[in-house]
Length: 205
Image 1 (tube, rainbow, N blue to C red):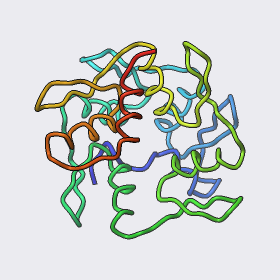
Image 2: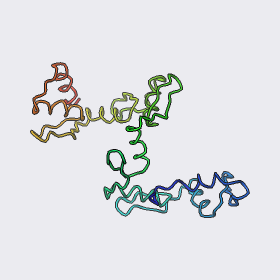
Image 3: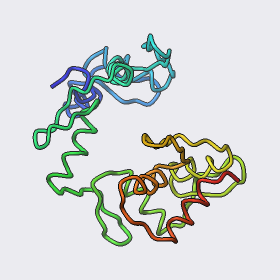
Image 4: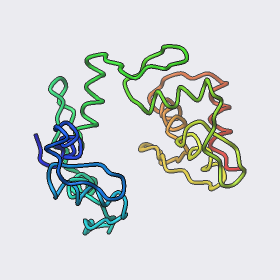
């Protein structure tokens, strides 16, 4: 196990008998077995973030969080799937990916019983029941269930087209439009309805 991905020492201390946890937080009363663990915990209350990234200056309350963040800059992916070899920057991401192979879906909707492999997928699904749309477009106020859908929509206002065809260099505002367009080059057929939809979505408001 990589040192930066060990379970939080907060969790380790919680599993210890009360008499062995001698260091108590004056803010919330939570107790710990080691003084260093208490010090790290207290940053939750103080907001202190003593560990800073030398690349982007983003700061963190724990050194392990900084180490994990730095992999975004280095591109390091030390956690590899034993089934397919795909690698990840964080052990948590690997664990989620492995459910693709195992079929495990531990997150269950309390409304309909449907299960999911990721907590984020469950949270999004639950909005179908509640009707909640927490993400609002900053330009027109339109609401969305997912932040990714909101960001895609906002490109209609900004005119941003980050998805570029590597054959003809035509650009699009969302990945699905690019994939549909690429079929022109590969010879795959597509319906006229899809063509109209792509045209409309690739045209800025």
